[in-house]
Image 1 (tube, rainbow, N blue to C red):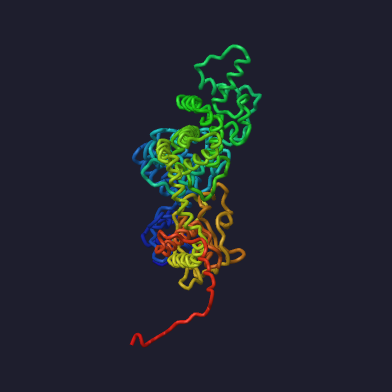
Image 2: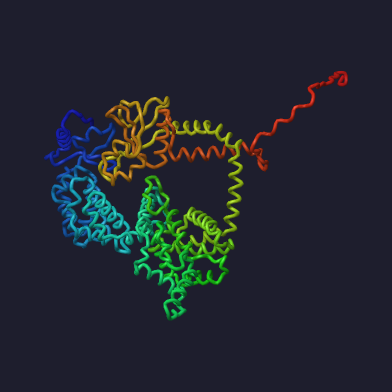
Length: 634
């Protein structure tokens, strides 16, 4: 049938009911037959497209009343079917409004709090609750403490069903994002340590980690390491007896077999000797070694952890070095302090997370004390490298440079556990580092000579033009974009593509295509400014807008980082601006490198001179003659 958009929707429904001899048209409504099967309202009727299949269904109010009665019935099978249907219908804003007005959310909350639902029934209940709350009709601040405790209990269970765990975590996430007061309540029920166990299953699973999950793991890693900042920036107070007792404990564990001599002077002399053997710079008052920040007291914490939890390793390192010649001993105290500072720099302790970074290390999610264990692995590496280099006190900085390179190279391999890290470090011995340095130096020298640099500069404009054409061709093919609304999850998409003449954008069903004047990304987008700071993080990195009038804009949320780079590059190219995405930089480096290698194939194993060959000296005389005798060839 043809729907007259000028008629009221109620009149159209009455006509349909009359055609099927149905009375009480106010008890019916129209719904989409495909997709999310949303109800048609006066506000959404303009979105109906030609050829769309609609079906007559009971009205949202009637459906809400029936489902509310059925989910409270005594029959388990009937209740399960009702909850399953409710979980599906709750995504519809029209139905949700009716169901919520009947105190439906309170009913679902009581079902969860009762603790009598399990398995599929509980999963559908949580799904319906989350979908209803996501409409923003009811404030999250109204959630009771008993409900929070029940949801937290599902998360804290070691063997909970995956579907229940996913929905419970989604509910807790929405609580934290939408309510400051609930944030503190959730924090009391759920600790980071309890969540780490679930993350370990995700990291160790067979499925690849998606970009969004990788970014969240990176953020968690950064924030976890930033908890060390306070100790890193705390100086030791030499007059604080409790802090000095830690140093005494280090001495006691290392030299426990030796009894303290009687007499203050003898004891002081012995302590000075022991502190020298422990490798402190200040033998008389080693507390002074921890007054510099960073690493401050964090270094002392690491040393105490090694001494108590890896006692055999600690004693071996100390006694092994104290038995060497003075010039070849590896000063444990000084090395531990400098190593702690180095690890803080490598892992950027105290730095804020980068919005576009996904660089997390899986091994830090495999141990409750990952930082301390990482230090213990690295201090053993330092001691081993010191021996391999046959270093002396004068070589201290050289050894630390080599150790830094060993650690950064091993971390770049992304070991999944501390045991794998140890294996990577064993393969990066001092001799291997020298070999890698030599190989990289030779390769770098070839590409840093003036002729090569000049060739690169000549090639770059050609490559940039090639990248530009690829971006524009991709825009002409077009892409699907997700429609962004107030809800967490959206089913609607729209399509946009560039015309073949690169003049206009075609999108959706609109007749007019605005001419863009500028492109903005991230926080500068109009549709991002409207969202809260916490909610916008999920889509901020893939959002961009075309501004074409003072009050007009076309807003995009790319499906992934690749499409975001393609479109922002292409739009910038159309406006005559520089393509500055990460993808462009990567493509540029790759293509230039390939092109240069192809052009230099004929020069393989030939040394490229740094300067042009010298101009030969002028001849002593310019009286040149050439005797041409054609008859010789006749």
